[in-house]
Amino acid sequence: MALRTVVRRLLLAVVGVPFVVAIAMSLVDSYRRRGKRPKPFPTRKPGTVTVGDGEVTTYTFGRDLYDDMLAAIGSAERQILFETYIWKADATGERFKRALIEAADRGVDVYIIYDAFANLVVSPHFQRFPAHVKVLRYPMYAAGWRFFDLRRYGRDHRKLLVVDDNVGFIGGYNIGSAYETEWRDTHVRISGPAVWDLKRAFADFWNLNRRRRLRASERPLLLETASTWEPRIRFQRNVPRLWMFPIRGMYLEAINRASKNVWLTTAYFLPDQDFVDALKNAARRGVDVRLLLPLKSNHVVADWISRGYFGQLLAAGVRILRFKDAMIHAKTATVDGNWSSVGTANIDRLSLQGNYEINVEVIDGSLAGELEEIFLVDQSNCLELTSGEWEARDLHRRFTELVLSPLRPLL
Image (cartoon, rainbow, N blue to C red; front, side, top):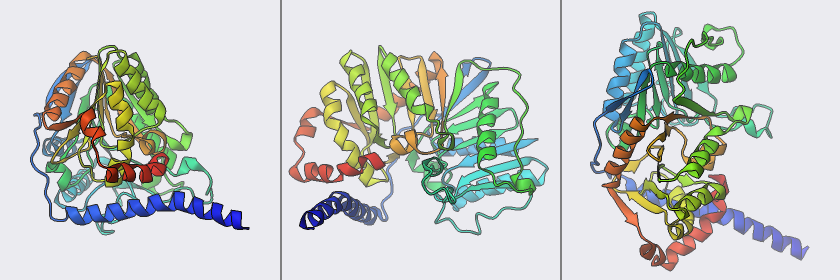
């Protein structure tokens, strides 16, 4: 009996202490952030390149992106497909809601998807729409009676907009005033044949998760078959309901094939060891591997846990760049000046093996070059972590990293 008690208490300590520490750190960090405003950061104006029979425009400042998204919504003639993770009920959120309702009022077929859990604190009044706007509120709890079905616990972390057959937007930006001016993120605007694949991505999610009722807002979304393909552009989609997680494989294949450079930007870096090993192996064979992260993100616990990988990455020759004074939320990568990806998936377990995510993969030197220029602008606002600085960190920091390490598989 005594042995059982000891084992029980030991397990409780191993599991419980990290959670208690994490909660305490989050509360303290939230208190310290009160009233603090991010500082300005360098950005680039939207840049457009030709890819195949269409164009791709990059955005690194929210206001530029939102202006073009709202303009596209305002010019819609037939259909709007809008999906977001977070949708704030502030001035910016209201602008988008009003634009979507006005489009529906003039006869445009408007479909909206948003995640209920991510908008738990948003006013219920804001989440009400006229009956002629078709809305799928992805439920906070989607498992129903299938408590043990892990396929039904992923969040809808995707952010995309498609207007008619003309234009699509995809990237890391949520909808809200803070994201418009205070966060550094990356989105792309796509035109040409690839837009149809983005439409299909929206329709597949709608049809997989809609409730089976007869109301018009919950009927299947049926699309015609695309007449052309764009071979340079592919949309990789994580679909936990179908146990499909191709985005991780997409990254690993690109990193393992790299011969010149791998430049990776992510808001949260909490991968599995195989992903870390791929970056280390690339650096050891002479590839210029750079990892750009926030110096301080909006999730302090994620910051501390990610540091557990820094020692082995620095030892292998990976450069770690920390974006200062503002939150960088971009999820982008370039490899060898020819391959690139922009999307919604962070380099963490929740994104790569848990949530609904979507990244665009582009094989084109001109877009890779544009994203490399953006990376260099971001790098100019970074503090690089050196091996000497890392080894000199104090005992308190080392102890905190150790205490939080059991949480790594959960994030």
